[in-house]
Length: 279
Image (cartoon, rainbow, N blue to C red):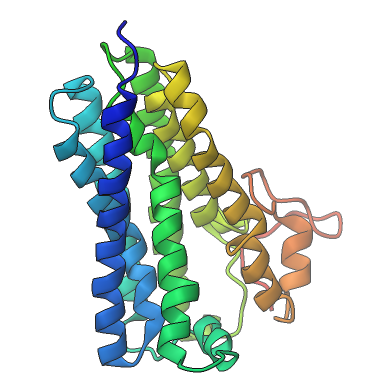
């Protein structure tokens, strides 16, 4: 197997950074016009899709065509589904309370502060987290069928958890009888964060695509590690649970439901663990 093309990959890193920045700049312009920065969450999945597409074009003549196309398609399917879901969920709502709280502390102009602390940060994270998607398209030699199958299977588990969990939560919230209650049904009975667990699986699955090259895998390992840290200890699970802590029934829900990795719910009070929502 020939060596990894570090020079071409280094140039690709610049193209990927430009793609992520372009998505964030366009999103920022739209957000300023609308006076609402929550749409940056929609740009997250779109930016990953843009990076994957730019890398596919830039890597022409390198790597295995099957691996290159598959990792691009899987990234785009995940990113565009996520963007569509977030856009649908936020339709008709005002500014996200998280951004309201952040911008309330802005020293000077709110928009400039948002651009520095939200848009540039998210663009940088897209560039960093997408390293396996970029590197996989430059790995020389044929792909390992086992790694492609394992990576695709883990990706599919992740997307399945995200899509099913999002759909179950949307149906639960649409019923007025559930107002003020905690969702603890379906996948949400097995983990308090099926969408975050899904993201975890997606990015470890995409990492497997780069593992035909030990050098490229070593460089890319930071991606799933950073994503895992963000999901479990950063802006994902930790912040959401802090926000939910005072909700009626949430303490009981956390006592019986796994915080991240799925497992059967614990029994309550020695009796069977029902599937209904907490009071």
